[in-house]
Image 1 (cartoon, helix red, strand yellow):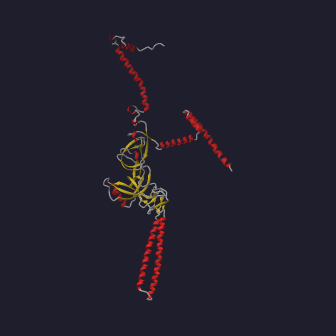
Image 2 (image 1 turned 90 degrees about the vertical axis):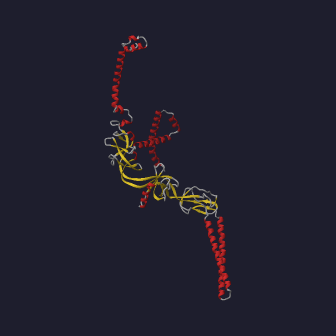
Image 3 (image 1 turned 90 degrees about the horizontal axis):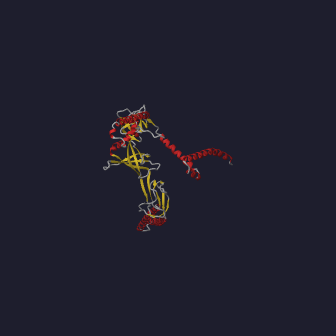
Length: 482
């Protein structure tokens, strides 16, 4: 092929740069270089003009707003997807939040009242017991022997007393006949009283021995939940043991103790004086799950000067037994209720403003005065703008908006349903792979992605084809069975 011919201006410039032209003869090249530069600039803008016009037509705007950044949500730009909530009027609770500790209504350490070896344990750790329920048995033989001994002394003294009384009766008859001295009658009467005292002392010893024998059966002093066992079968226990046999805590009902600022003291006292029941709720650490509902019980008699708070006690039925002593909980005390207040979703409030969705698909800012929050709703008062019941305010996507931006309302539950569908699909896939044989799994692992999809499709079609046949043959085989 013949070599490509260069433009005259380019050839002249090349010869000048390589020293083939003399400087005195190059003065006429300057106008030529200026003409070439102007022609290049004209050709470049001619080619860039249509491309820029097309880009502006496709992007819906140029200049500073055509960059596709966070300011692309302006008027005439692409609509921004947002989630919205509805403005409602409802009752809002005024709550005081605090951190509290659960305390058992009563705690008892079960100790034996007599010394001895544990012969039987009649409880299971963690069980609920009633007052008077048998928990343990101590070897009773020594206490039974002591009881038999004092009973013998009682029988002996009762016999002596009976004989002394008979003698006293005879002496009194002889004295009536003037056949005996009065001193002998008085002596016999004193002997009778002596034996009566001995019998009374013996009876007291019998009662004490019976009580000691009864202490060998260890029972629950209160109703509640048992803790961990502190003594094992065969151990010798004493009344002075610090840990005892087991601990019982009364958890039905159970109390929660927490502190509230002294600024709320007058309001709480006023409500209690009116006989109002102040509801109290217990929540878990993440404040996502409510544990129990109760009511305020009592106030402490002094304010803590170091913290400026006062302790409050609330009672909870704890019928399901899910609350444990010394458990830390989040407490919400309701002191009053705002009736028929205007509320918005809490996520819609940002710096005392909300974005109101208008009928033309754009948003506008509304200044509000934020009130109290109750769950995911917050009471508000519009300031400098109308905010009515039934209006829609933006709850998600606020950071991408500005005044007058176009929005597209999306379904808030669409993402949740999509995630749920993906989880269900994954579970079905895992169940399907679980039914494969080891050979099929090895073969599947060595396949390419396209081969793997085709292989899975064939197995699925084969399974769907055999499933109706197996279901149809099952009733027939059941009917033919004797």
